Image (tube, rainbow over the protein chains, first blue to last red):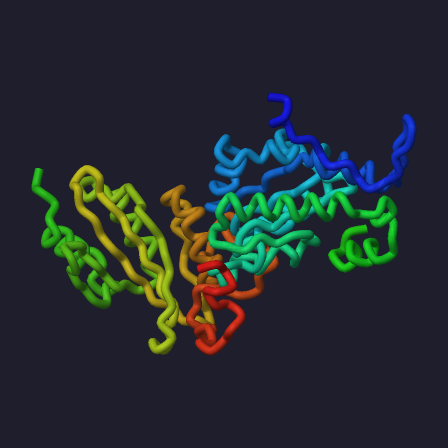
Length: 181
Length: 168
């Protein structure tokens, strides 16, 4: 049984008699990437696919995302699954603002990414009009495999993110472009 | 007690409001009247208070836009029902788009409050005497009335919304 248990790969570093040396970035990235707490913001059919992703068949828990955080304060990753009406836009932004740094956003499905088939006066044409998005998952709705692929792409980003990225002028300029201080 | 039929209802209405009723139809068994917009509240009140008719349930208020009808571009449609007599009635009132005012029925039916706000939200029909004539469904900042026929249909040649981009 023990051979079936998979553990995270050791980051590149130097091994010697009784020690292992690597950079702090890599260790922090490894820890963060394998314990992402997602906040599901599910509004429609993509949310149903996301529920299947969380269920035992696809089991997102295998990626360290066992615990859904229904409070934005403890969440690392905002999962936006479904159509966001213009009236919902400010609420979505408020939820994003309540999350602590570092935070990531996964846009699941055509509606969250671009408005999808709802090319109309009442629907936000993509959540990237109100908050920055890290990974887009296409599909209408996407299958759980695609959502898992999106989460794994997020894990790659988390793993390789420099510790000081959130303090960088580029990141601040990005947030500023969304009117976030 | 006399049974309230469509014929009986029409008779009573014409006796009472003959000059305010512009046309009469009975499509699919529902009496449909086009009425003078200024008389809407009088007719509804009379239908509601009448001892025999008792049209006390307001099913719906909605609007529509007819750009080709001069000075009657917007219309308000009332559906009322008499539960006791199991009979329905439809009233239509046409009003000009330049002055889209019509008396509010919210003093008569509490249900009219939100229905009139919705009609205002989508068609810009101003129900005078309404306690809170504001948008109900759309974002407050919206500066147009989305269901008016004032907007071109989507350009059929645009390429940024094709099925292939959505995994369909």
